[in-house]
Length: 259
Image 1: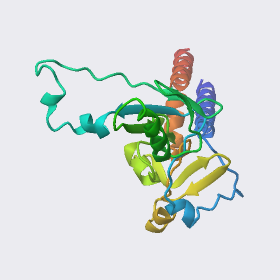
Image 2: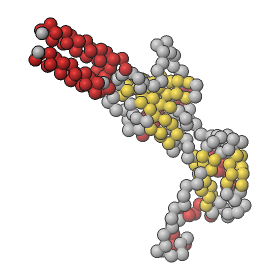
Image 3: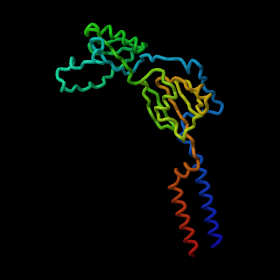
Image 4: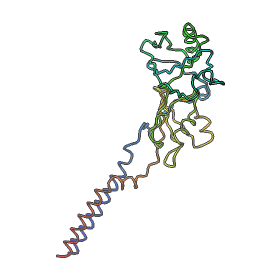
């Protein structure tokens, strides 16, 4: 009987060891953007870190247009009684209308029709639209904004899409918008993917921060690698199986010990 119990205990120990080994081997399954040991990151040049950029209008961009008469008087309207018939009347904000830049770089706007804006900055496009709307509105004032310029943040900070509301936004600003780096993140292992380039960034030191706090561009993917805990994650992933295994073997040992 003692020999049988010893065999079951040895079997239980072996199975638990195999379970822990399987857990430790599987804890990296959700890591993204893995790189080989000999991978060489694209160099973050001084120009990439510091150069100011004005986003240009591209195909498939979504734009928002606002047009005002009298040089935009309604925007500030220091004397609102002049523009409202009744003080008690409430005016609802119009819904946000999106204007698509088609594959030919052309945008179709109300009243003035189709205009090609691809390759222009917002300021350049506003000047052209202002001239066109001047034909219909006295002293027209035009405001044009992007609706789809954004970057993607993945990894330890969770999956987030951060809209770029301003030009020349830095990596630190994006991470701050994503609620910063949690304790479970590796500040020394941040990857920024831009088209066919991958930048490996280390923000854990002042030197690394100054070298890697680059200006992001629309479409960038930022991945913050999480800190992994093999033992804890292995237990979590296989807790149900381990519980069933231990219960079964314990029952067998109890039955054998009563014989």
